[in-house]
Image (cartoon, rainbow, N blue to C red; front, side):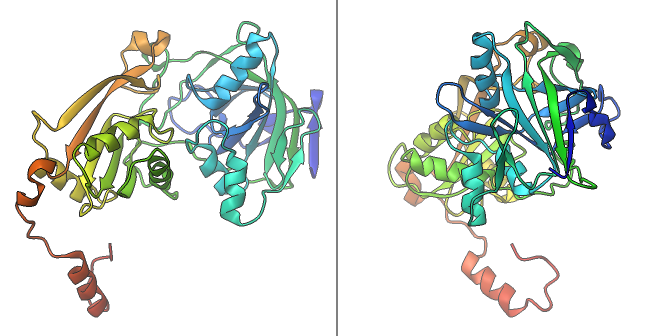
Length: 370
């Protein structure tokens, strides 16, 4: 609260708002951001991440994929003919940003999860205008409201999104999206913006990849036993390792992946592997897929799964008008249960033997430990 702008003083273009990709339709302050709103029915405060374009000094455009929790909450206000009160922050503790774009079930507080990881509660202040919690150490925070789309929208985008494409709308061009009317801005002296504008998925990833850990936790909560690893590669590829315990175990795990909130949306391929495969090692995963999958019997197609118009493979008419669904392929890259014990043994070096060699010769071996 070192600096405050209210009402006619509000000017977000006071800050160095970036245009991150050559063909972006404008400048985006909301990339490494958090967005908070409160469910009018339960009082649950959700924190998510959604891109935010600066249309005017006091007007933000916001793009929320259908079905996202922040969007569902706003729609409940809109059905009552009301604007949805919101808070957004730009910069601050990266942990809050990481958790805000992690897929937790509805009703699970991202702020509580952050406090659990930090070992103490996240310090917040009560928003003077909205009553919403504002992370106290944010670099920049805004309070405002989202009017119903039938009251006000603006052309938003295009924006280079996480799949590595310009998507949404007709041929990826700008389309009408809701706005945030900014009523107040609070900021620290010399604030630092966190820019997390996505690049193509093969670009270096400078963040903690903990999506697999969240999925692992949710799979166990759903009753899937024997999970020994999980990893999310480039969002569209999810790999789960299990120690098979009974016939149908691999299929149970594959179907559960489609139902867990951490992986229900934006998927394309699910790969179930045995416990000897490291889900985070794409070379091992491809080895399992090419040696343990019979295409005729071990690939299952599931239709009408929750997707997003950001999916570059979604036909343009469906991206623009819905339904926003796609199919998923589940690869059962495991030794077949009925003759698992007769499956050819592997000839690769054992992990325990490899680890012992690496420890013994760590001073001279050129390759990194894995």
